[in-house]
Length: 255
Image 1 (tube, rainbow, N blue to C red):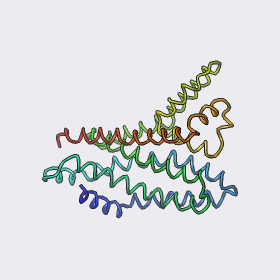
Image 2 (cartoon, one colour):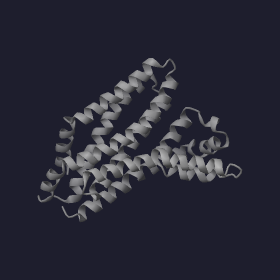
Image 3 (tube, rainbow, N blue to C red):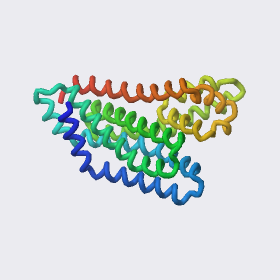
Image 4 (spheres, one colour):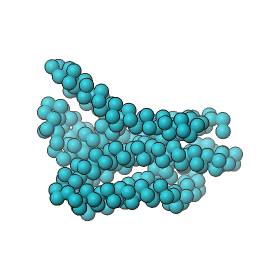
């Protein structure tokens, strides 16, 4: 497994997309901190970029890279290697490469300008989101034989989580505004890793007060140490379940 991991990681180190992704994030991060006079405002803007861009690129890149390496994967599968080990190694290598790119592009400017709880929360949630969407990407790629269809499913998944899910939550809040449904919104928001990450960062920036009772509910649950632990466990579960499903599907797949 580790030999496959090492080879895949070395291949990714020469991959133009992974390198371009790192420098794109670095350029955006530096631009926001240099152009914005207030570091907190720059961090809020960077948060929006990270929450939208990181899941999209992690998802699409994982799918495309899996298909680009498909022939090599088939070659490995006929060797005396367990299929579980092959896919786990590839998934870990892709996740490692994208996490390193993220920490290089976003981590260096954040540590240089705002080395505080807000910055570290952004880095932790960005790392978690990278792992989550790499897992979703590998799960989609394994189950779809056609590359274009897999990319399409990935894009639809991203749109549902970034735009549609938030719209549904807002619709629920406005439609049932006369009723105390905020306690119901908390677990619903936790079902979306992007929303969960946004809430964790928002609480660190002290923006929860702007949301009134809803913000108070978020603060009560997610603001405590136990709530933070549960939140990161939920993100870990979002990574583990799709990755586990991908391994099971890959073992049963007719290559």
